[in-house]
Image 1 (cartoon, helix red, strand yellow):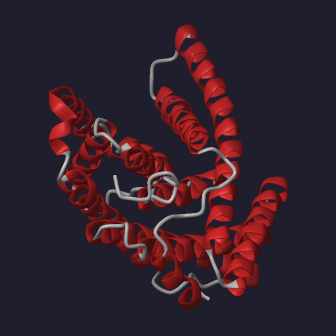
Image 2 (cartoon, one colour):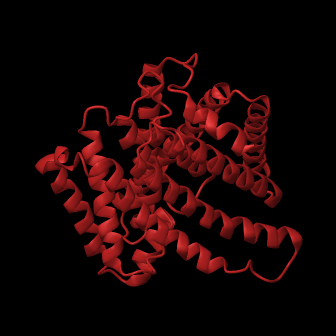
Length: 332
């Protein structure tokens, strides 16, 4: 099926305009990004850092408020992520010319939504496996189809390819263990840890490739304030590494899915390049979708913690490919 529709995608100059107004879609994407960042800061970071702070009435109240607001942001983001994913995949299906490709993408979309609903309702491993398998196929098929578009520069293709490859490594680890559980095997999937660590290394390479693709030509747009912000965030991460190793490792694993098995300077360099690309894209004309895509990938993390994080990853790849810019098909 992939061989049928990927060439047709590269032949067209522009995605068919959906019924949803492009300006409205951009506003919804901005709302999704804001809510996802709020959930990350309030629910995944504040509440987990709070357990390491001195106990007190004020601290406990603050953690409760952060948890409540983060949960609201989580629910809002989940609903909006599902809606935008359906819109984007429906748009991609409308762009395909082959009936078999349209049907295949529609089946994957319906199966993914069914797996998502069953996973949330029952928590059954079979539902998790259905959702994980369909999401993997969607990321691969959509990723390859979008990367093949001529509007995506070569450096962008490398970056997106590394991102998809890293996701595949994580999904091999997760789906492999689900398969072992469902089949009632006792042995772990072959090379599970090695593949998982290879995926983490690919994440670092993807951060450098993202800078090469979207940050190298515009990093000066970040300005002094933007560079200072990036330096401050990287410095904060570096200083946090001086805390007890178990604390920083747990926070990093829970928040981003990174285990820090490689030397710390590699992670700091990758983070600096990635954040510099985000800030430079935000302050560049026409860089909204690049910035939004990178931030969604950052929020999703290497090991998506919740089901909706998988959707954020898929949306991030679509945004980076330029798929969401129906009214402006040329790269920003």
